[in-house]
Length: 427
Image 1 (tube, one colour):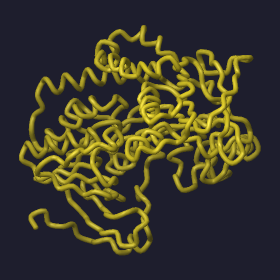
Image 2 (tube, one colour):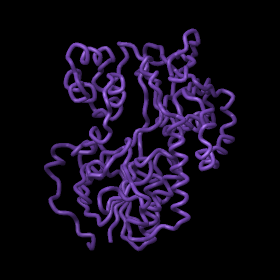
Image 3 (tube, rainbow, N blue to C red):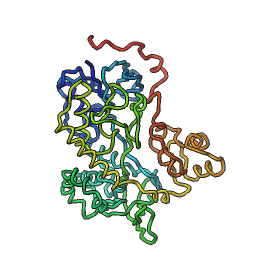
Image 4 (cartoon, helix red, strand yellow):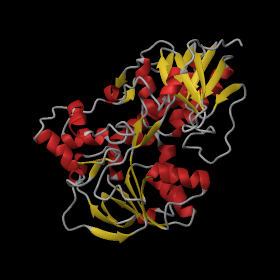
C-alpha cells in the first residue's frame, strides 16, 4: 500500500512516521530542501526511517489521488517530472502569514513575522537593528524572542487584540494549559508587550525609518490622540495565518469556515484523502503532530489510540478558543488610505478598489478583479484577495478562491513534457 504525504512540517512528518509504522510504503513530498517546515526551520530534523523523501518538489496538479510533481529549484530549467498514484493521500500543506495593509506597508524593511523568523532561524540573519513586531496572536512573542536572541533591539511588541479575552475561555485555557505556560519562555520581551495597539503607518523613502503606532478600541479602530512615532529600521507584521487549500480543493475536499472539514480520523469528504495540521485549523505544532499521526495511521489502514484522539480533541478546543481571542476585528479597514497598495503585485491601491465598486459597479470579487486587476499578479491573490474582499465589502469564499487547476507555477514546456502514465510503485 502506498501512502503519499504532502508537506513535511510537524503534521506531515508525524503522518509519514505513523504510516510507515503501519507497514505502508510512504512517499513524503515537500517543496522545501529539508524536512521540518517553518516550525523546525534551521534544526537538524531527520526523515523518518523507511520514508522516501522528495525534497524541492512541487505538487502542481492533483487528480483524485494521482499527483503530478516537478522536482528541482523553482527557477531551474531541468526540473524532473514524476506522476504518482497513491492508495491514500495525506495533505499537510500548512499555512502562510496574513498581513493587513496600512500606509507604508510596502516599504523595504516591512516583512511578515514568519519571514523574519525564517531568516533568523535558518540563517541567523536579522531584518534590522531596531525593530517593532506587530499584529495579533501568540506567534508574535516567539518571533520577538528569536530576534532578541540575535541581538536585535525589539522596541515594542504590539498586540492588536487583548489576551484578557482568555478570561472568557476557561475550557480553552484548560485544554491549552501547556501552551499558556510557555509564555514564561518569553519573559525577556514581555516588558515591551503592548495590548490593543498596532502599527498604523510606516514612514521612509528607500526603506522604513519610522512607524506610527496607536492604541485601538475593541473593534481595532484607532483611538484619536494616542498616535506615537517610533524610529525603527524594520517592522514585522503578522495577523495570523491563511491555510494553503489549493490541493485540498483540487482533491474535492469540503471546506468549512475556511478550513478543510475532517472527521475524528482526519478523513476528508473524499475517500482515501486525509488532512492534518493548519489546513484543518490553526492550533500549533502539538495539535498538528497529533492530527498527523492520526491521519497517517488511518491512511495506512490502522486505528489510532484513544490517547491520541483525546490529545487532538483537546488541541482543537484550544485552537477554537485561540481563534475567538485573536480574531481580526473590522476596524483594521480604517487604517489604509486611498493611496495604500492593497495588491502589491499589480500595484492596485485602495482608491482603485473604491472606484471599481462605486463607478464601475463591481458586484463581487470576480468583477473587482476584472475592473482593477487586484489579485491577478504573481501571487494570484494568495496575499491580497482576502483583504481586498473585506475592504470592498464582499464575501470571501476560501474554497472558491483556492480552486486552481495548476496549483504551483509551471512552464508551458514542463506542461507539454508531463508524463502520461504514473510510475509503477513496485519498480
